[in-house]
Length: 291
Image (cartoon, rainbow, N blue to C red):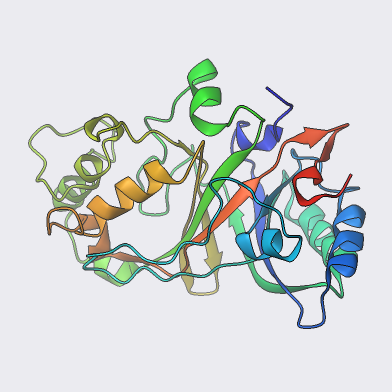
């Protein structure tokens, strides 16, 4: 296996910013290549994890097997916005101020070929919990299993990214016992509830209950902007299949039962990216023909 982007498997950082870029109207292959070469000085796969969107691959005429844009889930009873982007960066650090400068430098390097579409400031909450109070990523694969789940043989990884906005007024109106039933775990000790309803999030997304099993490595972080807040859901895997299987069941497309999460939170975005391996401690753009 080639060297992978280490940030994918490392622990969630204290602070992060997620940057999504689209190609500028005047961008051509030459301008985009120059921008990506410049970005390599920062995109080491650890402090800055990088993902390529289908739009960017198309500009270079690159065939990346398994990479495509999210469109929709047929039969879904909930709205799942499709928000494709050309380039995605997960900038990670222990200090928010450092990320201000990272973002500034990234935008300088990528201009004028890329235009910033969205920047989401995120952070670690307590011991890795969502702002709803529940632990996130409880059953993530560990060790060698995490490598097998998150990475392809060439060291790449497919990333599914969603920004969810929580409606805390709705959550506040629900008792703690009912919240636990909605999630399928107790917030107090993270123990799974065997008598939780079929709509409970844990039951909707039990990775081993799918055929084939739908395992992926979740690396989600809470976000906040003024009075708005929620979770940036990020899942890395060897393909988008596991994510789509879980989203079909969550959205009611599989059996008409929607995940209880939708009672207080909704997705604002859904985007797909391919995170290439690294070479000489820099993200390797060779799949785009940049060597």
